[in-house]
Image 1 (cartoon, rainbow, N blue to C red):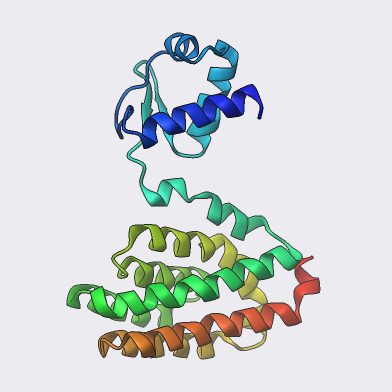
Image 2 (spheres, one colour):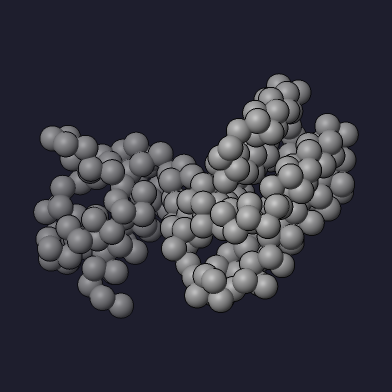
Amino acid sequence: MTVTRRAVERIKAMIADGTLHPGQRLPTERELAAGMGLSRSSMREAIRVLTTLGVLEARHGAGVYVTELRPRDLLEPFSVLAEISRGRTLLEVVQVRRIVEPAATALAAVHATDRQLGELAALLERADGEGEAAAADAAFHRAVAAMSGNATLAAVVDGLSSPAFGARVWPGRQEEGMVERLRADHRRIHRALLSRDPDAARAAATLHVLELEDWLRARLSDFS
């Protein structure tokens, strides 16, 4: 393990054991380095790494603080994976979606409020009339995931179905006339949510993502 990695793990351990709390200011680089027996340069690099990961944030003139540690911020690398992966890895991303998204949709059938379901219906109506199918698709999946009541699961779904991911695969699907069929999938999911039927919601979401997976597998060479 490199010195920088050791410093990263030590800071993470301080957060995990409650020595440092969300929103708390870190000791100075000098104090941290001295306390851990490491160099200031290694500590500076460790802080930079954790800032990139969303664990820490540097506030100009005020020091470095632990973030609120929200799942959406900490799981942002999922969106990077979905946005830049190619070939087999891109297919694996969709396969992970097929595992987690139906679970989130089933939870949404149980936990969604009437207001959220009404907002989802309005979103579907807007999607039927707009031209940017990729953005509408991503917005639908984000909304359903948010209804799950599980912020961590919602963050994973958000990352794996980001607008940038949709922009990569939607042009080909539009060319093949799949947009209306996929919108029909969305309406089917919405009906299952309205019925408060988690099994139907899970099945509808599974079929929806499986259709994307099958389409991508048949055209994997286009994304290699």
